[in-house]
Structures are given as C-alpha cells and as structure tokens.
Image 1: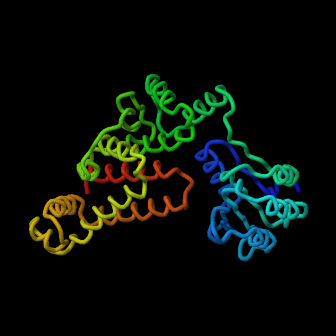
Image 2 (image 1 turned 30 degrees about the horizontal axis):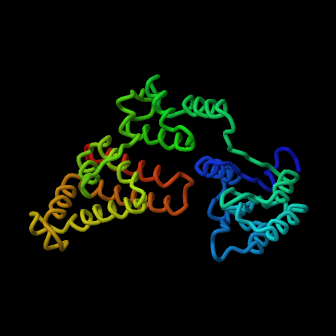
Length: 328
C-alpha cells in the first residue's frame, strides 16, 4: 500500500468516549473527502441485536458502486467476541483495496489479536491523554485554534472545571462561539453561565429564557436540568419540540387571544398564552428556522454527529436563544 493510499483499517480507541467519537468522526470524514457520505459509509455496532460480523466482512469485500471507496464502520468495537475478532483479523490479511474498515472503541477492550492485525494492515489512533502534560497540550492546542479567545481567568476556570473530562472542551468552545460570535474574547463572567450549576427550576424556565433571548440564563437552566441524573438530552428535546410545535400550529391560524389559543390547542391557557406570544414574536420565517434546528438536533442525538448529547442540546438552546433576540 502506498503512503498516500487510504488505510485498509483504522482503529480509534481511548478512555474518553467524547474524544474517541470525535477522532472517529474526523477519520471517517478524511476517508470520505469530497465523496457522498450516504453512498460510501456503512454503519454497524456490536451493541445492536442484529449485529453480524459476517455482514461487516461482506461490506468490506463488496466493491464500491458509484463511488471510489466503501467505508465500513464498526462502533463499540470492544464488544467484539474472540471469534468475530479472529474473522476480522483474517480478512485484514488480504483486505480489498477499495474498502476501509473503521473500528471505533467502546463497549470493552478490543481483542489483542485484532489490534495486532490492525497495526499490520492500517492505523491505530489512540486518543488517551496519559499524563498531565498530554492534557495540558490538548487544552492549549484546542484553545489556540478555537473560534473564540478566552481571557486568562476564563482559561484557568475552564481548565479547572473540565478536570478529567477534556473531551467536553470542543463542545464548550463551539457553544461559546455561537453565543458570542467568532473571535470574541470571553471573560470569566461570560464563561460562567456555560458551566452550569445545581438548583431547582420551573418547567417553563428554559423556554421562557429562550423566548426572551436570554442565552446565558437559558444555558444555566439547561445545565441544571441535565445535572439531574433522571434527566437526558432527549427529555429536553421533547420539551422544546412541544413548545415550538404549539407555536407552529398557531402560526397562520388567525388566533388573537390566549383563550382562543387554549381552545385551539387544548389544555391550560397558561402554556397557550406563552405559545401565542412566542409565535407573534418570531413570525413564520423564524419559526420555520426553529423547526429546522430542532429536526437537525434530533438527528444529531440519534447518531448523525459524534458530539455528546449534552453538547447537541447546548448548541440548540444557544441558537434558538440567539434567534429569539435577533430582529426578524
């Protein structure tokens, strides 16, 4: 295989799921290049009841159609049993030149025999930050290329906050860029709302803050919601879907009063009043944009991006808040 040829196999592993996921996303993107992701990439996961290593090998041995390369992805590769790992190692002894196999760590330890086969046939990407120096270098490198700048107290606070979870850094930096704009120099006071805090809140605190365009408040409420072990990003999505769906239903319906809105939507006048006010403020164009943002975030939470779920909803809340405070 020439040095410029795509590798027959890539194993991405590490001890931080966020870093593994991002590295895998980047590796797949490099393999796809300018090609059609939908035609080139075939996904499998060992945690699926329908997982079959035979299907993975068949995919690797099938020549590409209408594209230059097939990319077969196996997620949770640590869940491969010894017999499946052996079959993949045997395939890698003579892999198809037009295919690339991407093994994404998780679900346990990838069998040693398969790791050995990967090293012989392709590349191993290890995202583990083994020492304090590795973590410091990772932090400095991401801040150097970040879409925003952080003042010294903010950098120190963020480093302390992340602690042993460096994988959260890229998502926080991206959220800050949505909130304040690319190139903004973030102060400690501007950073704090993005780090979250504990506390109780009313069910409508999140949507009220978003509707008012109070991005920092909305993100604080979001973090308090997600700090509850019983909560989940999909719970937040359900709340936001319900809120914007009600506004979307009212748009163009000729509804003028909260009582009319309550009769039209069903239920209490209290949420109907909020939906009516939000609908009037946003207007049709921005409501359609909000629905599009929700749909994209929903797909992201179900696997179309490797960002953590918490980061997906953070970005969604930041973008919805920004849209609410902007002019039509």
